[in-house]
Image (cartoon, rainbow over all chains, first blue to last red):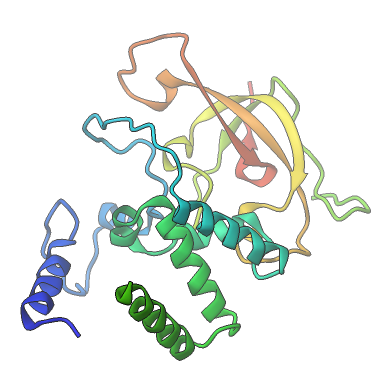
Length: 141
Length: 103
C-alpha cells in the first residue's frame, strides 16, 4: 500500500502529464477544426512535429527488453496476435502520456498484457493478482 | 476496382508515375504520415502485395491484398522553406492511398 505521501505524489504527477501546451479543456461542446485534427492525429505519427535537438544514445538492450521481445514473438507464434500491424497498433494506441512516458519495450509489455485481457485469454483480476504476486516475490529478494 | 482470382486489387501505378496521396481523415490508427497527405510525388518502386494497415491492424486477414509502392517526394514539396533543391524523402503506401496526377 502506498503511504499517503506517495499517493499524493502519484496524483500530482498525473495532473502534470497534460500536454505541453496547456489549454483548458473539459469536454467542451464545440471543438474548432484545427483542434479536432490535432486531437485525432494518432500519437505515433510524430514526423513533422517541431522539437529541440535530442541526444542520440547508443544503448544495448537490457535483459528485460529482450524478454519482452521474446514474449511478444512467442505470443505471435501462439496466434495471439498474428498481424504485425495489430501488434504495432497495440504498442502505439495507448494515449499520448503513455506513448511518450514509457520506454519502447515498456509499450510492448503493456500492449501484450492488454491484448491477453482483450482476447479473454487472461482475466484482468487474474492479471492483477499475478502482478501483485510477482511484485511481492521480487520485494523479498 | 478489378480484382483477380487471388483476392487482390489491381495495381494501378507504375514506376515513374506521378501520384498524389489522398487527404483522408485520421481515425484511430494510421501508417500514412500527416505531412504527405495531399502532396504529389513519383512512384519509385512497386514493392509487394499485402493487407493494408487499416485491415491488418484489426486482424481482417481475409481482406483483399493491395499493391504497395514506394513514393519519392521532393523535400521542398513537403516543407515550406526547405533549403535544398535535390533532397528527397521516400515512404510507402498501399494502392488505395494514392490517386493519379494528370500531366
